[in-house]
Length: 171
Image 1 (tube, helix red, strand yellow):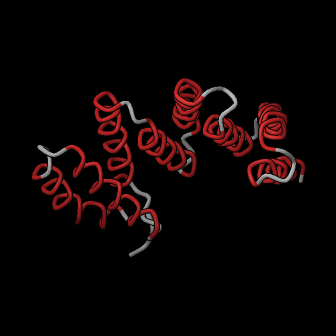
Image 2 (cartoon, helix red, strand yellow; image 1 turned 90 degrees about the vertical axis):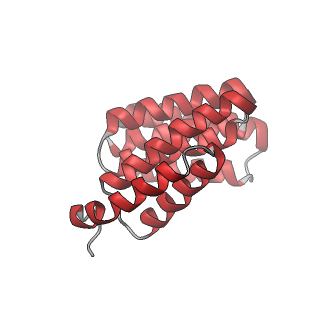
């Protein structure tokens, strides 16, 4: 099958929905199943409507689970996964809203200068680069670079990643 094949999505969607219904009483197991299947489809390049459905469901489940245990890592991962998918599909407006939620969630749970917050801002800058909003991207990359340098130093991988991203923006 070809990536983004609607026929393939339709073919397996019925079975996927059946599995989702069967696991509905165990939110943690359902979240795990949805994430694993989403990763499998993404790795295979099958980024059609079924993957959007799975990533959206993953986010909904993680939001519910985060209310129970206040553990933000899985929630952030689900937000980033859906935002990245929407970004690759060219839905920049929805991706932007999710990346902004990632940033505010990371800042709330880990602090403004945390690595989680910096990654979220870097992701948002990458979205702006892809959407040809170069001045917004540059501003955010510079912000991340300053904060990363101050918190981690020049040789830290996060700092070097941001330098690389900024260089790609100028290329």
